[in-house]
Amino acid sequence: MEPTAIVMMIIICGSVFGGFGVLMYGVLRGKQDR
Amino acid sequence: MSNNNEMWSSRWIYIMAAMSMAVGTGNIWRFPRMVAQNGGGSFLIGWAVFLILWSVPLILVEIHMGRKTRLATPGAFRDFIGGKFTWLGMVIAVICAFLAANYAVVTGWTLKYATLALSGQLLASHHVDTFKLWEAFSTNRLEMLIFFALGTILCSFVVYLGVKRGIEKVTKVLMPGILLLLIITAFRACSLDGAAAGLNYFFTPQWEYLTKSTTWLQALSQSAWSTGAGWGLYATYAIYTSAKEDIARNGITAAVGNNSVELLAGLTVIPALFALAPSPEFIDAAMGDGKNLTFIYIAQLTQNMPFGSVTGIFFFVALFFAAFTSLIAMIEYATKVIMDYGISRGKSITVVTAFLLCVGSLSAVSWDVWNNQDWVWGVGLLVSCMLFAFAAHKYGIEKMRNEINEVSDVKVGKWWFNFAIGYAIPVIAVVFIGWWVWQSMTWYPGTWWNPKEVFGVGAIVVQVGIISILALAFNNWMSRRIIKGEMSGDNEKGSLEKGAGSGVGREMLWNLLQLL
Image (cartoon, rainbow over all chains, first blue to last red; front, side, top):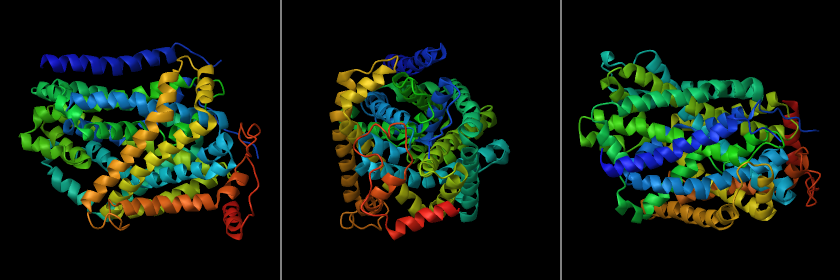
């Protein structure tokens, strides 16, 4: 793969998948109802 | 009559349900095509921008309105901004109902292909001509009707069972199923020889595309239609959350989750196309139309792929799951609208199913009707988004933001939310609708105003206009008849204000519903 594509893939996949993972982790860790 | 709503069992289930509602066929067959046609990585930049600027703010508005009122959009609009605006909520609901009728036809297609894949009829050993297979199915009115009806009735049955016994149970299985299946297909596709060319194409920004307005407009269209923001669906599912349930984190998680699935679909389709396509012309042809991409070209490629039968099953079953869960949400929305008049779930779902079967059958047997309805209600959804932004503005954007932040782990920033709802979304919506109108005028230079043109402006004006006029005419009646929600006592603007008179027609309709 070309370097530009690799960088973009890391940024896009990292932010989207990583963001989803972090958000779901917060949910599953029990940020419960108040 | 009081509003006794079921509740989601847990926060995790609610987010899965919201994701299942958002993740549909558009994630899987439209996204890869849009990326391919609009400069690869450049498109992804616009896609990410509009997630933040358009989709998430609208989702937060919807969730807040649904959660606070515990009524579908007509009642939510009534209680949030006054009885004289009830009709706006009904316009949103009717737009989604007509879209559901069209989407039920799509669900039928995905059901057909899931059964084909599972029964081994897409195997290479069968030497299937996927062009002829799709043509045979799509021109067979009876078969299209059967699968459309089957998909509709199955979804209706799930909704009939209710939130806990129906929607939750299905969501628990299908949404993780979609994720798992697409993760597997993405890994499979990316590991093919030649997949790197597809990944280069997917992620390399073609910077000149960022200067094209169509790139940004298509990125907006993908974000708007993929996340389902502003359609009334997030508001509906939010009705079943607890009073102190987080809004911001839940909404953002569902939206990012939707985009994650979309990215997985892209990582499946584009690398597979580049790895297995016999020629560049094949790729161009595949990217020309979403239905063809999925039911002809992907079906063909899975025959050529090692272990393609398994990949094909995973892909088409995931596609069906995506369509099925989205349709469930649309049917639940329409059902809740009727239930808000004090009608039981059973009677309400009967009416909704009858509507879908009648209206959708026209789309099932006529490509002109299907394309027209897809066009009209696709633009109609942009109107829905504007109406939600209007509701937030009328209620008070800052007031809404503060209320959201009171119950949210993730705080919603003023510069983002207020700017997006107050300025960005209305301006973008007007530009976007203007673009579609302009396109229609160029497609039909002399007849763009004609309501009979499949992709004409006239069709939009007439159909959206009719439902708007009818909703407005019945505004007072609806406002009085909708049951009390949790905000109904708070709103001095008149949750249950009296109208000028009941009208014989309205009373007849009411009485008919009671008799069912």
